[in-house]
Image 1 (cartoon, rainbow, N blue to C red):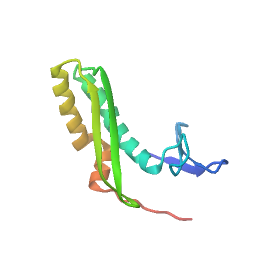
Image 2: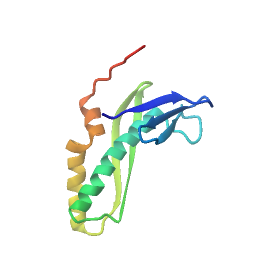
Image 3: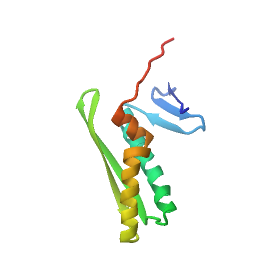
Image 4: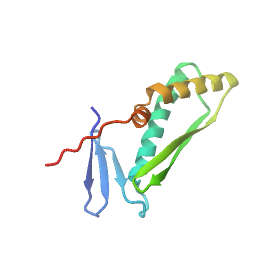
Length: 130
């Protein structure tokens, strides 16, 4: 089970912490050095894709020279995102590596990225109040 805690900090901002002690600062977007919740969602989608694509491509014998991506989305309502676009930026060592990369990235997008699949298919979110 995945689990994070989110709490208000002494400074009045917010912090998400996982069980391994990693932290991410969260804010409303008007403060330097913090992610907004929407940016965290986009980062989760990009991270899920890229950390899955890289080892699967390497396992097939093709280490990419450079592997990066951007993830963008626009709000279509004040509280809703429209479509999200994942754009890879890679430097390929060969055309064969490109073919392998594209096939792996497509499979990851369609089947293996938990975050992407959850967004596409919808995931129930339950609220528990004290």
